Length: 296
Image (cartoon, rainbow, N blue to C red; front, side, top):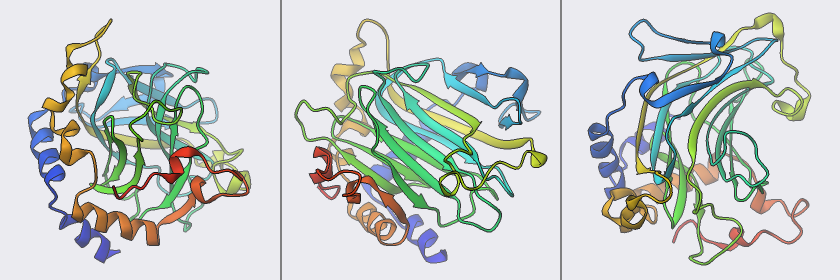
């Protein structure tokens, strides 16, 4: 574990240097500047200075928020601290979606943090939807306890690849093939969302572990939201045709750097629990995107 943290901190690829510069330059703003509450406002609260945001779940309901703006391509980042203790059945979701609801034609990029019984590994699930079709799940263990402190979860999205990062370490790379296809979401602008909700029918050990409501409320917390992306304006924003003016859609962001490849290889060897591209029982004919190399 210590080896991984040291390894990640040593990654000095061009893209991550650009990320540091970009995040320093992007104005994070207050919660009210960036977000709206989706439901259950009474389950949302902030720290006294307004810089930390809390979502809570009890037996009645959870809570969620979304950005006021939509984006098409960019860098999206947030620090989260997850529910501590016995959180079986609880899902904290941090994701991007083209619609406010789970519409049948939505595009979506998911981080889902699956609660656990005390002492069991905390799992992170990612998924990619295009035109309402998902089924592209990967699950990873984390190399730290995500309930003890804040950790940074980020998405890099351009027309060449989607990369899911944890503390600047790439854990998943989802490639485009440069052609019109039915797997890579690149046409619809997306909002960014986060929510906490009960999913004990599937979230922990396939639904075997149920939520212990005696421990409610379950609380997840957030801070330091940053975005550097193409903000959507109907009918079509100028930035869509000039994205290559931005670091997140330049050549160095179209593939992993050498140092990122080393970190990604470590993750693949040690932390992957499930990869739909390796599930031949579920997919006797593997989806088209599974043939694309994350190393290119």
